[in-house]
Length: 402
Length: 192
Image 1 (cartoon, each protein chain N blue to C red):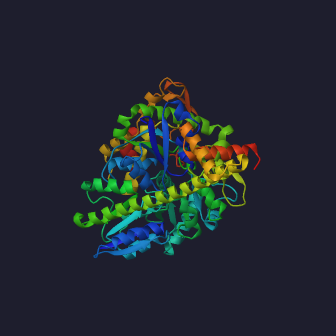
Image 2 (image 1 turned 90 degrees about the vertical axis):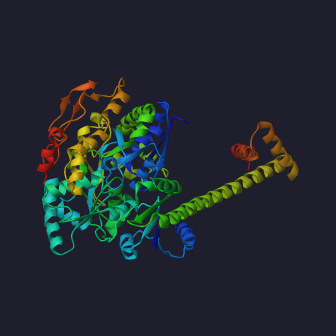
Image 3 (image 1 turned 30 degrees about the vertical axis):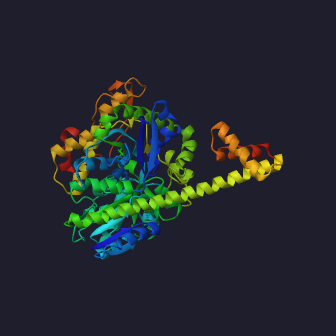
């Protein structure tokens, strides 16, 4: 069937939109059929995309840029016409460490938690047993958010602490075995660690960057060109799935679907908590509500802002220890394709921003922004340290990072 | 040549191992445990690493190959871009291969080709097994339907089977579909 699209995904809550677009018939309404292929590593999701087993993939945003720039493999241009969501990750420490750095029964303030952690980092480094953190992938927002936070709190990643790769399903076990002291991972894996008593949540990544880009829908550029019509249908279906996903009325039903064996194969209770912005931060404790823990739809959250791709590039250069290159920054920016998003949603009820880039982290309060279609108010989108990323001055921003 | 086979399926790993044992210059190491994976790889110091695509530790291994200064010799999935066809075949078969830098392609290719063939053979075996189990289930359904006909209509067994076959031919369906309909109908009517 020519209107079938195969989409690769990892079993994480933020794979929700393609799954729900399929399950609720939004894809069918748009005249396309989705075939979903589950894998257990980003390497395999990427291999399937590059070797034509899948047309599109649920992917950590930095990996789409790294693949385009040829980091670790020969370069293959990928395109991102749709962002699958913002944030939804958390930092979880071994319980005895978590209790030393954050207030009892609450998630902490990023600065205060960071300051308390810095003391422990110094002690452990002096003792020759540096703190170790697990992240899901080198080219993940998890890695970049964790490092951004640590660096802004005066902890030097790679020098003061170790950061290694731990696959999400093994995070709880790695904490329990003491292989790592902390993890930065998506749901439901923080909650799984909490349920098992292996860890306690100290921060949500949305506290580090209030509107941080997370998973994206990635395709090979030639596939996007070749299947442009189907991809635009897919984008409309994903938007409908997003509206359905964020409606609290549907959270139990959607959690039950995502929990099924062919998708996340996990606990519907834990999944529903993540959907509803709730976190059980310690076993036996109270559930903490943190608004916009996951952010899947409002404020055109799915719009692929070029400035977000460029911000990710600055972090890639920062942590890969490469020289800043204006040409590469531009190539990274072109991975995000607001033009495709716009043409897919033109004439629908979805708001379309007037600009394709914005100053990231500049809004302290709800602000109406200019649109091409509909009306849109963007809420606070700041970084916890108050820094602002102006895509017109990328090199200056890069130079200003600690 | 030192080859590490990383697979959570011990059965598949042994099928690969058995195949590679035919190469007389190969030393084989099978790893099925997640814990301590990287330190084992460090000790083994392999020339080639074969890992199933379904293994969640692939990202861990790739990260290790990408950044570890502990490795004397860099390892990559891509020796050069001319390997693309071989890599595509590996991905199709469900195996990823990582090769130490500087290894002659002529030595690597037969090993990877063999791994690809063995992976395909393993999935065919699994398919056959699933099919055999399916056939067994079909057989049971047909037997059940026959018994229903024999009991409710007092038919001898050959006659019951002939009725099933006739109905299937008339309706252009498989015998098992007719049998399933009979079993379901009887369950719904609730007298048995």
